[in-house]
Length: 374
Image 1: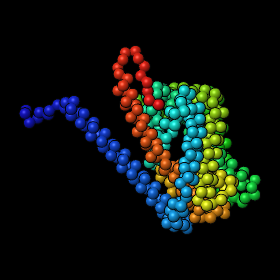
Image 2 (image 1 turned 90 degrees about the vertical axis):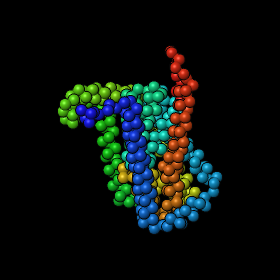
Image 3 (image 1 turned 135 degrees about the vertical axis):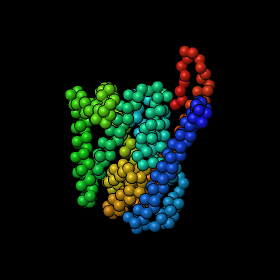
Image 4 (image 1 turned 30 degrees about the horizontal axis):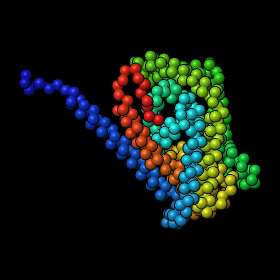
């Protein structure tokens, strides 16, 4: 019957539906990012004055009085830290150039810093970049595991270093710091032991892959057996790649991460001194340890609010004056967290522009290699 006739959807209709769906996804993502930034600003605005007893007007006045040449020096120190960290990335992904390592670092941080649990978005962006540079997904997976493992181990090792510095300098660490250092040491030892065991023992790695396959089979009863088998095989192959990378480049990974943490400590010390807080080195290490651990909090992007309040509270408890400490910690977080958003966003925009121009200029020449942007 004529009334029952339903017109078939043509290609134009399907294309419009796809565009509408993509637009809706972008709007939802933008809305979540704005909400996350608003939550971070609200947490910082409310929490920091109440934990330090310092007004925002006094902090703004103090930061505004810092000489421009000192700010330029702090920016240079921040940039040196990023360059040192790139050695960790090139060690985790053989064949990655220094420029591409900085591209992954800055663009991934820019995306991750604007949303809670935004690390997944940053990983997805970096994965697409690695594909354009013709790195295999398994190599990128190994890179991801290695860099995150070294980052977590470094953040757990910092409380131990801070505690040793406090005891050596004759400082009196608080009960919370002692408890945190003890807990971090236990977790650190457990993670190192588990990491070494999985890499060295084929039997343990096979058992881990079997557990992964079993979990997939339970989650997906119909098609879980085949997917679980493929995932277990991928886990074992990725483990072999990780072991190969770690065996060859663990000195570079370790020295690079140690150098990066040293540059962060130097930046925090310089920011505190620029704000008029002559904090000793052992206190800087304690504050850095707290800041690095609280930056993992998934409540706000980069632990904003919690990280600043915890760092300020630690430094004040160790005898520093509240007002310059608040200003110095905010200055440090402005470089290590806030500045990465516009710089990384600009870097991403330039990368996309160069990629588009390279794609147009390369042309579809048969048998010719396409030069991908760095």
